[in-house]
Length: 428
Image (cartoon, rainbow, N blue to C red; front, side):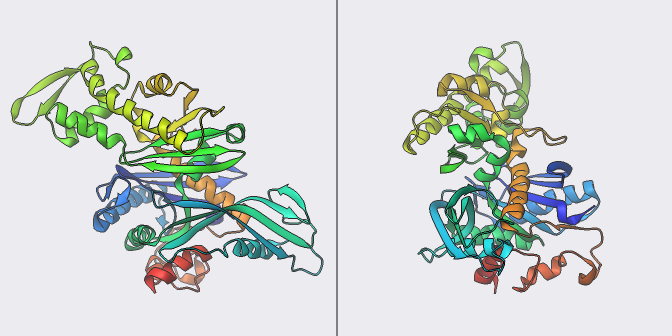
């Protein structure tokens, strides 16, 4: 296995932590390992218990390690939340080489120049996403490396987040004994696999309905324009079932996943099941039709809030319509209800890879694809995340030991400069 082409994504959600090990070969991704563990340390998408989150990360990582038979050391981490902010940026540099050929160092310098902005002290730069490069006035260039020129410009988007939220996320990853290869914005990552180029050009809204929150991101003219996070998700549906049927939240979650239906018109009165209720030793019998009367109103509310949020973001008619993803949309009938509520073209995005053909893995797959694009465009070192033996010496390994990772050596070549800056701020 070539570690340079192997990536591990870490998607920390409210309802679950997912780890995906993928191998990039010839531009295509092959999933070789998956780990999934329940998440108990998050509420509404925010970390509220570091120790519980660390335990969930360790469980998911252990499961993925057993599947691939190797030790995971570095991960590509997804970040999301209301604290995220985006603004346009640009940078200009002179090409440094005598032969005027644009190389990696020129791209690195122009990316650094684009980050020279006035940012409040409580915020930190997460990433810079190039929209286009301009070489001597010639615009629309995706990758200028190898071209000849005197003046190199870059126009793009700078993504910032609250230091506290990022600190808590990185602290959880660090305490789980992992290094951070890269940090990616989750809606951007999910969009790299859930949305086509044509949809991004025309205009489309990606709706990621998770357990504790729903992320709305709008893409147009080839890039993400706006995003918002609503503090409502699948956990609210679970709570409604729990309250309405007088049962535990664990039993309500099971009923939702195994017997739930989101569209009353299509729900069956003949499909019945038994469930335990609080204060009653005997099992109660319910039908799918009855459960649909609990699920549909809440999911309809979520979809209406999404529609309102897209309008607030400044988009009234998107030719590409809506694309749904996330664990909650796996409830049967969600697509039919969404088409009824949103009154635009609606489709469901599911990753087309063996072992992860479920919407809840969209973000994890996207993190790998997006990190690989960063390697190509920005020359970042985000791979080399596995090793076959923990006892190997550092000289024989492509990445430092887990124990070495915890020291967060600022001279560590395996960590991107962006992440080194995080560790410098928070851990040194």
